Image (tube, rainbow, N blue to C red; front, side, top):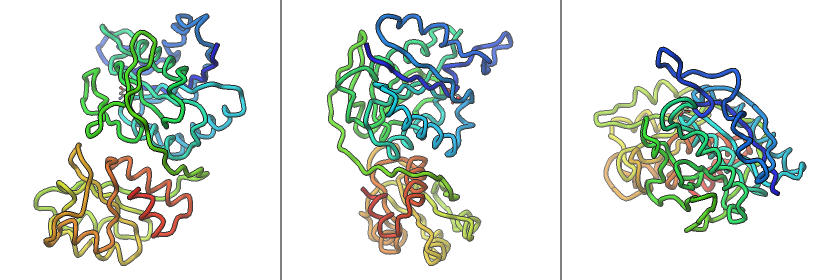
Length: 321
Ligand code: ASP
């Protein structure tokens, strides 16, 4: 029988609806009562590492999770399941994906409906995540996110809907597998990627979204010595309004890394357009084009790169990998 380490961190999956209709945290996680459903099938070691809504997640807490999982590598654990609030689940999943060596399956899950709401998806997603963590096929695929019968990679999955249970999607490439009746079915391989075993998560990195008529004022606000990096969610294939360029040039002159992703939810940002503020222009200025990950994940990747001591050239390679 496989042994799975369960790390509960909080989120809707561990919350309940109260008499006034509001959804709130419990002192005791309702999933703890349900684990007997897996008796005789899986050996669970359960820890409540945090009990927070996921907007309270921080990089320091992500680092704590990483360190707990690294310890599990020496504890004869076959897989890890992390329950997490869905709002920032993709960020924690991605952080673990690029900072941990993938020795055993690591699966994150959550819920859109709390434990006592009609049609609650928490227990079902939890059990699906446990069986995915037990599956031999889940090895070597990086950190996985299991929600609503689908298996996604941490790298590309994103929350796309505020309330629907089918909120987690992988827009450009689709899920890599599915789970049905306790069995996993994988349809795609996941290429290996660089892992940075960082011990710190220092540095202020901001995500700024571009829009029609944008000028340089937001960039001027973060043009200071406390800023370690900037991620821009640019327009379309990777373009910016020309009025942003003078402020961006000043930031680049300070050697602050500026990373660009697209604000589109599908596709990859590229240097295609050769006009003032077009991608060709931006890349020549020294802006780093990141490949296919979204703004919050590019921020995590930049922080991880900075904390592993990479030079500007190495950061460029790491971010555009
Ligand atoms: N706001 C909640 C959280 O992220 C949403 C959820 O868990 O689904 O903690």
